[in-house]
Length: 306
Ligand code: ATP
Image 1 (spheres, rainbow, N blue to C red):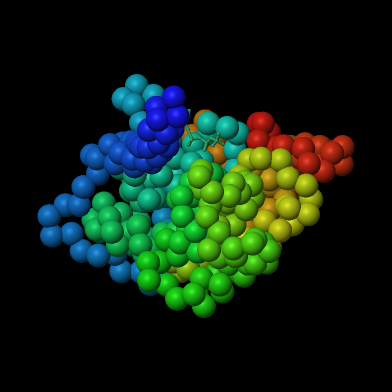
Image 2 (image 1 turned 60 degrees about the vertical axis):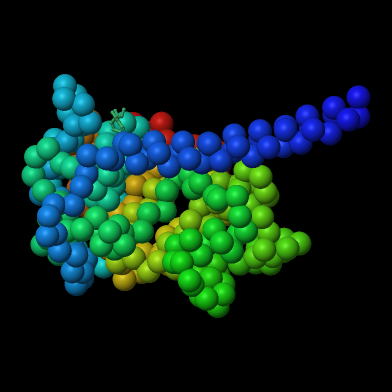
């Protein structure tokens, strides 16, 4: 019996390994597959970044022929400033970031970076200029150091530690028994959503992108965690053209521009103060979130409809 048990047990381990690799491969291929239609034109030049002004010029977009998602979306993020996008679930916020990263091409209008249409520059140079902090970061089954360094292959340990410090995750890493050598991911230490997002921030800081897309996690946070996110956002957005997809309005009160998206259209725009004074959809969202915060500091906010 024992003779049979050992190989079977071994097979079980191999099966789990293969399954895990397949899961990773699947993720990779579904991404590749999804975006296969996007290709560099012949003789495309690299993007030349100066201040990294981002312009959406009358953009219309649909994933499928019969269902338009964005309508005449027109805005500019001045070089080095932060624009926040708010709106209820499904209004098209993440679609804006996918288009900027050129996972898809627009159907109408254009997206320009420092005056260059994203369709006219190499994808490699475009993606090099943009750092994304996603809502849910996928960690590789490797060390935490590797996971941060992934932002910039060949980064020195000093750079990695500096990035981790700026992302407020260095002390946490140092508290782990194996420090930066701790294995994370599905087969290693499981990190919380906030910790994973901080790894993603460190990764992005290491990459030093001229443009940053920050997709704020929707999960409920206590006010301490919320303050931490605010501080991190300030740190990473400093002197960078930043687009924040925001769910907690309190994290974006300092944004140079806030866009309110509703069913794929920009229905309001301005600073926090201007939008409160306008007493429209944004002011209502703000009032609702404030009321909820008074009731319970950790209440989720994603269902806030405009
Ligand atoms: P949330 O706050 O929930 O993340 P969102 O405002 O970011 O929402 P998007 O993810 O931009 O919304 O989605 C906008 C619309 O596009 C939704 O109705 C969604 O169902 C649709 N959509 C998103 N991705 C695809 C896709 N790959 N194919 C078809 N439709 C899609």
